[in-house]
Image (cartoon, rainbow, N blue to C red):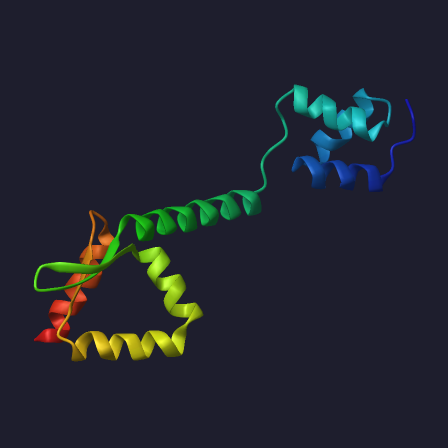
Length: 138
């Protein structure tokens, strides 16, 4: 049996997210070889995913879901039954952020010309925005 250092055990614990005893046992089984110990733990299905990685994945999935909902929601400008602009809300928001001063001027012109602004889609985002607009009109 080779000499196993505390640094090796710490490294295995950190990389594989295992307990001290599991890391030490894996190193003993593999004669102190760190790479072999990691492979041993992987074959034994003892490597646990880190909670940080799980939280990161959950945040990414939430963000992706939000972007998909934005893209499935449409922003439409129309007047007298004629549609002048019909874009996904995600594209509209990106354009508004990039061209902020122009966007403010365009919004004023839209209302001055009597155009109708409509947010449509089968998403909760569309429902929330439309509910807010209805509340503001009251």
